[in-house]
Length: 337
Image (cartoon, rainbow, N blue to C red):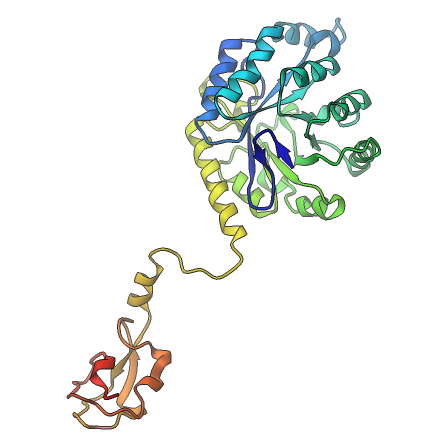
């Protein structure tokens, strides 16, 4: 699966910094979030974008909130350009149908169908029709709803999408998901069932949780980013600050490299430890020059800088070329060839 210049495959993990409407309609702050994300090493930043008239009924308080958060056409276009200038992909979670065509025209890299729209036919159809890659977020969805959405997508002939497992409990007053409820085992269930990439939306507050998800099989990670939790912006309880996000990304990259390595390798520095902690062939008693070395003449002790213990045949039956004191590491040069 290709998203912009980045590829999602079994060798890499696609890491998304979720902006999560931290900008609250302040375009300058949105650009600062792109700056912050670009410095953490993530592959992409995700913005939730909407036109209020296409999102809430006008009598609902949500309409007023999102009307104040709308960006101008110039600003929407600039979000894409600025992200590309910072070498990260821009992913749009469209909270209104009309936003989809606009952001596709302006060159966003991909879409993320928000969990709230997993059962919204118009959103799904419009995203698929753009031909761009996309994610389908599965938060608070049951299996019947997931199957309905995936079936609709497949019937429209779109194989270029991924699933994002996750949970969302902020509305219930539970600020930050408990690790035990992350349902990571379901990642491989989804991968085996649908044979498409599956990722994880992390709504815990833990910096190490993305790495756990990668170990569980996640191909994609999304994690909320905040310039500072002290600002107490949207979902601040589960956000990582830039330094923390950078560390989380580094851990994920390292874990992925480790998982992909399926042959036994000696780690850098391990041979030093090996020489200290393994045992060598050692004289169990004094050995005179010219003596034939037998099993009673040797034992095995640390350090491991001499003949390894499992190479005892290199010593047994050999003639000593020198006097060897008791409790001395036996070296090959002490033995006649």
